[in-house]
Length: 423
Image 1 (spheres, one colour):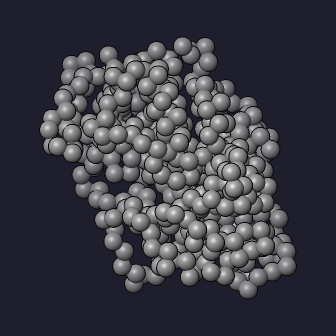
Image 2 (image 1 turned 60 degrees about the horizontal axis):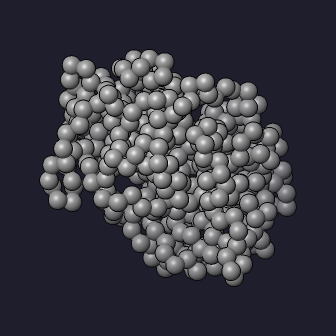
């Protein structure tokens, strides 16, 4: 029998590859007619990169992404707050990668097609329902574009990897409603620009109300010497602001947000120039969902954003979906394609991701920027005049602990999926 995976994003494709690694058949169903490398930049943290390396993807990641060297926080005036090494420079056995989300998905897709076969990666298949059978589960699909039936498939398990607007989660929790918007809006884009700082630095500047994040996602410059720089501008809007919540990904209007960043010209980065020179910027709400008390129902469970959508704070969205996929694979290896495997997976991953969702709502490690803004809104000479070194270190260490990527602890852990089981 076959594990049915609803959703061909990063979590779903990682799960399919992981199941193939242990000799379990999988079939991926994606609603859209064509999987294309869409999106903007993301970071994949060392504990998740480790799992992709276990799947044999290191060379592809190195070709397409940037090995992040450091993460640095700055005030709205461009003054340093805190910086720390990342990836190999921080002592991990595995790098951290800054990479275009669509490129990472394409790497996973190409590998899945090669290993599982094109016949097991089905597009134009939107799940409409399922029922348990004597020895498994039967799922029904339609082609959303035409409304026509897209056949029924039998499998052993059904895994919801269909994102924050999960059709499966909606059927399990029909009263939940739309994702929760907290009043913040993100404007995201990619601009060809000069390298900054180390050339492999991820920066965050500002505070809780107004913030700017950027990092390179191309390792080599283009013919004109420019690098692809991914950026995110964020604003916490006032309570009176009316936002079209039904529209979750629309073209941004620079004139609506650029004025807030016009003065953010630092000697090491020109923020307004990045925004102004971006060919296509997009607007998103900053949304998540409340943690659930249960993911698993019989032979169905949730994974990734379908299970625990979280704010994009601490670079953890894609990384946690990858970890979900690997833990679920390990439990299927241990318990077989059974309800027991799903329950064991949930028992480990649901508490861990619940803690992370709640910590991200409190700004995660980015709270250092808010503390600086509250204590020294007009600036400072050195950050330790307003925030002690111990406070800085404690905030950073606590987030690594909750997110599961403390250096020594991660380096000492065995692989999630035992190597001896690899095909």
